[in-house]
Image (tube, rainbow, N blue to C red; front, side):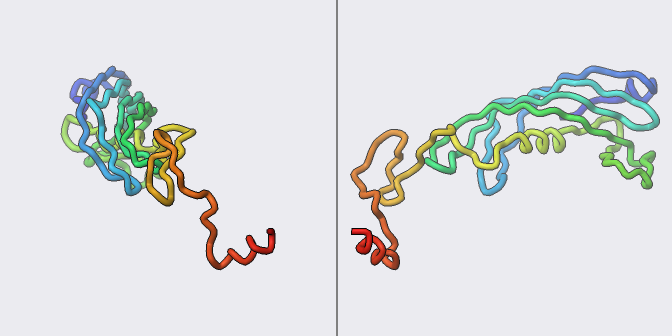
Length: 167
């Protein structure tokens, strides 16, 4: 996901629009395999001021992963805002406190920042739906599709005496 900034280097204060579509490889995130379904689309603008390139835009993607409750694969659409600053390695001010990414040459690779922005949009628990019932803890059947005949009174043997007291 490279943006050519050669025109912008020669015109400080200007802004250019960009529209980038690119495939991203699958990654492992939080113990889950995240597969990008189709290309990731990023649109936005980049401006150049005081030797800093400011990138503002939006990224859209669709990912496929596995539900942590029922272990079924499902797809989820993601959209994220992107706001990053870049400086050439030769020019970057080391005293600057803000997070500025380095680049060399006439291309800025926004792929790592796009990936981070999209991953930040994933929920903490990857579930296929809010009402996913998951798997039966005894027989393993997917409770979203079928019912099982397992007893719901699976009591810890150490606490069984309390059940007798209740009766």
